Amino acid sequence: MKARVKWTDGRQFVAESGSGHSVVIDGPPDHGGRNSGSRPMEMMLMGMGGCSAFDVLNILDKARADVTDCVAELEAERADGVPSVFTKIHVHFVVTGRGLKDNQVQRAVSLSAEKYCSASIMLANGGVEISHSYDIAEA
Image (cartoon, rainbow, N blue to C red; front, side, top):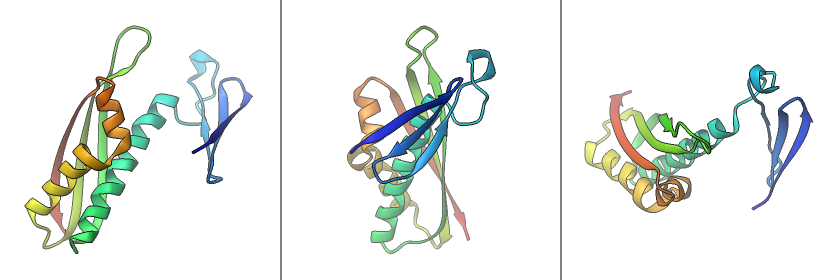
């Protein structure tokens, strides 16, 4: 896997993934940025959410669950000092579908957290306290 991050100006960068997709990363004005993109740590949090949601959907799809929507809502706490690393992350899934079974969704969330989500597991192995919850909504 490769990526390239190029400085554009101020504290703005354009990051390009090895697969050719780009995203703008920027800082707040009080740090020389223009607030034109996500912060680097926000990108990490969104990446973890995307990784987890991808897993949950894959697992539910293999179980032939009728999912119509899946949202991962993440909330993180960071250390006060430098480096201001993540100390806690909570992921709350809202899975919507027809006739979804609680045990299927619970299993999908658990498997993602414990076995499949590389981003989540990497952060947990680095000392971040990660928790998960979910709600099921009928479509």
